[in-house]
Image (cartoon, one colour):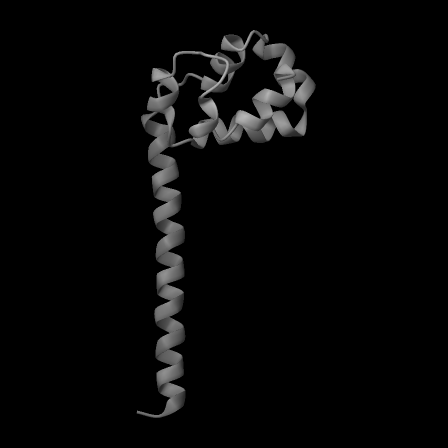
Length: 106
Protein backbone atom coordinates (compact mmCIF):
# COMPACT_ATOMS: atom_id res chain seq x y z
CA UNK A 1 0.00 0.00 0.00
CA UNK A 2 1.36 3.43 -0.88
CA UNK A 3 1.93 6.21 1.62
CA UNK A 4 -0.91 8.16 0.03
CA UNK A 5 -3.27 5.29 0.71
CA UNK A 6 -2.05 4.96 4.31
CA UNK A 7 -2.40 8.70 4.89
CA UNK A 8 -5.89 8.70 3.42
CA UNK A 9 -6.91 5.75 5.58
CA UNK A 10 -5.52 7.45 8.70
CA UNK A 11 -7.33 10.69 7.85
CA UNK A 12 -10.58 8.81 7.28
CA UNK A 13 -10.19 6.94 10.59
CA UNK A 14 -9.54 10.24 12.39
CA UNK A 15 -12.58 11.82 10.77
CA UNK A 16 -14.78 8.87 11.77
CA UNK A 17 -13.56 9.15 15.37
CA UNK A 18 -14.22 12.91 15.52
CA UNK A 19 -17.71 12.55 14.01
CA UNK A 20 -18.43 9.68 16.42
CA UNK A 21 -17.44 11.82 19.40
CA UNK A 22 -19.63 14.69 18.21
CA UNK A 23 -22.62 12.38 17.72
CA UNK A 24 -22.04 10.81 21.15
CA UNK A 25 -21.88 14.24 22.83
CA UNK A 26 -25.08 15.37 21.09
CA UNK A 27 -26.93 12.19 22.06
CA UNK A 28 -25.75 12.40 25.68
CA UNK A 29 -26.85 16.03 25.94
CA UNK A 30 -30.21 15.25 24.33
CA UNK A 31 -30.75 12.34 26.70
CA UNK A 32 -30.02 14.58 29.70
CA UNK A 33 -32.56 17.15 28.51
CA UNK A 34 -35.28 14.60 27.68
CA UNK A 35 -34.80 12.75 30.95
CA UNK A 36 -34.93 15.98 32.97
CA UNK A 37 -37.90 16.77 35.18
CA UNK A 38 -38.17 20.33 33.86
CA UNK A 39 -36.98 22.16 36.97
CA UNK A 40 -34.39 24.86 36.54
CA UNK A 41 -32.06 24.08 39.39
CA UNK A 42 -30.24 27.38 38.87
CA UNK A 43 -33.32 29.21 40.12
CA UNK A 44 -33.44 26.94 43.17
CA UNK A 45 -29.74 27.50 43.87
CA UNK A 46 -30.23 31.26 43.71
CA UNK A 47 -33.20 31.07 46.11
CA UNK A 48 -31.15 28.95 48.50
CA UNK A 49 -28.51 31.69 48.47
CA UNK A 50 -31.13 34.31 49.32
CA UNK A 51 -31.46 35.95 45.91
CA UNK A 52 -34.74 35.95 43.96
CA UNK A 53 -34.10 34.03 40.75
CA UNK A 54 -36.06 36.38 38.49
CA UNK A 55 -34.07 39.37 39.77
CA UNK A 56 -30.70 37.66 39.33
CA UNK A 57 -31.50 36.25 35.90
CA UNK A 58 -32.86 39.57 34.63
CA UNK A 59 -29.76 41.46 35.77
CA UNK A 60 -27.33 38.82 34.48
CA UNK A 61 -28.09 39.34 30.78
CA UNK A 62 -25.88 37.26 28.50
CA UNK A 63 -24.11 35.60 31.43
CA UNK A 64 -27.50 34.55 32.82
CA UNK A 65 -28.43 32.97 29.48
CA UNK A 66 -25.19 31.00 29.49
CA UNK A 67 -25.82 29.94 33.11
CA UNK A 68 -29.32 28.70 32.23
CA UNK A 69 -27.93 26.68 29.33
CA UNK A 70 -25.19 25.24 31.57
CA UNK A 71 -27.83 24.28 34.13
CA UNK A 72 -30.04 22.57 31.54
CA UNK A 73 -27.11 20.54 30.20
CA UNK A 74 -25.55 19.78 33.60
CA UNK A 75 -24.59 16.21 34.43
CA UNK A 76 -24.66 16.88 38.20
CA UNK A 77 -28.40 17.37 38.76
CA UNK A 78 -28.58 14.58 41.34
CA UNK A 79 -25.84 16.23 43.39
CA UNK A 80 -27.66 19.53 43.08
CA UNK A 81 -30.86 17.95 44.41
CA UNK A 82 -28.99 16.41 47.33
CA UNK A 83 -27.12 19.59 48.24
CA UNK A 84 -28.08 20.93 51.65
CA UNK A 85 -28.33 24.55 50.52
CA UNK A 86 -25.39 25.72 52.62
CA UNK A 87 -23.67 28.90 51.53
CA UNK A 88 -20.58 26.93 50.49
CA UNK A 89 -19.95 23.53 48.97
CA UNK A 90 -21.62 23.80 45.59
CA UNK A 91 -18.32 24.83 44.00
CA UNK A 92 -17.27 21.19 43.85
CA UNK A 93 -20.06 20.19 41.43
CA UNK A 94 -21.96 23.23 40.10
CA UNK A 95 -20.75 24.67 36.79
CA UNK A 96 -22.57 27.90 37.69
CA UNK A 97 -20.92 28.44 41.08
CA UNK A 98 -19.03 31.51 39.82
CA UNK A 99 -22.17 33.03 38.28
CA UNK A 100 -24.15 32.42 41.48
CA UNK A 101 -21.37 34.02 43.58
CA UNK A 102 -21.31 36.99 41.21
CA UNK A 103 -25.04 37.74 41.30
CA UNK A 104 -25.46 37.06 45.02
CA UNK A 105 -22.41 39.13 45.95
CA UNK A 106 -20.60 36.28 47.73
